[in-house]
Length: 342
Image (tube, rainbow, N blue to C red; front, side, top):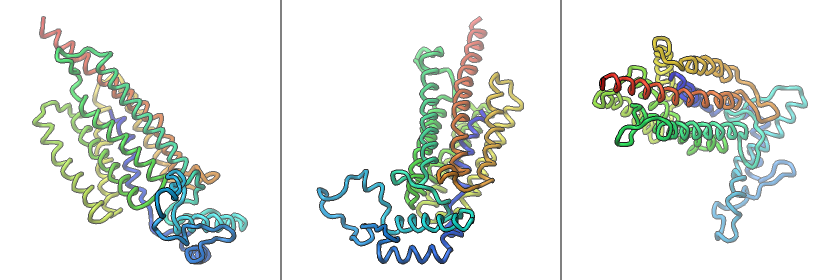
């Protein structure tokens, strides 16, 4: 089950690669001048933004634009920054200079108002793969495998995996929203959901790799981690969004569970261990995409978005392993039950 590591890896990287407030692009005097003038005049060259010269009150609801049109607008500052960035990058390209980051992000091309369309698309696909995996896990448990007399599953970790699936889907949802529009609220929701699933994944890793089935012991193991994760989420949301501390927390939880799954894969005799190793190794290789950062190809595909794409097949393999584990444990428990009956 180290395979779950890949989801932990995603959340770990989400925490690791936080957005910086200052980059080479937004330190460029020409860019800064362009933004300042645009916020006053509402125009960049011949292109003007009506929202720069209007009040925050959009008027009665019946004269406002539909929400799907409002979504495409970023407000005066956002549109000024974007258009000034586009113009400045054209100038840099003409001079043969490489792209630079602006406000911590590469110069992406927007699509329907979406800031990073490729990352959004791949986040949605990851969410879909988690939903498919979680649903197939449910069907396997309750429609393909034998059930107890009270119609409950033999597999002891069923509830934990259901919670894991819901938290993972929630995390990918907010990842898609965050990459659609990076504002303070979406950033905090993305980080919080990432920390939540990473923390729960650590609990799940401990319980499964050490085969903890006694309820009281599970509570003793889970309670301190849940308390810490909850406190951390409250801290970054209501006290200070400290990127450095958040990185330390995510690295600690991610590395710990990676070690646990790898150790378990090495010593267990699980028939689907190879899937676990594939996810661990492939996930590690995919991490190189985050280390080797590069500008978006054609304005859409940067290293981070390609990493999002790489996690899609790993998700499929991971949930396949979870189903295999449910089948393996159910089969083992039934054999023990028959042996005792004899």
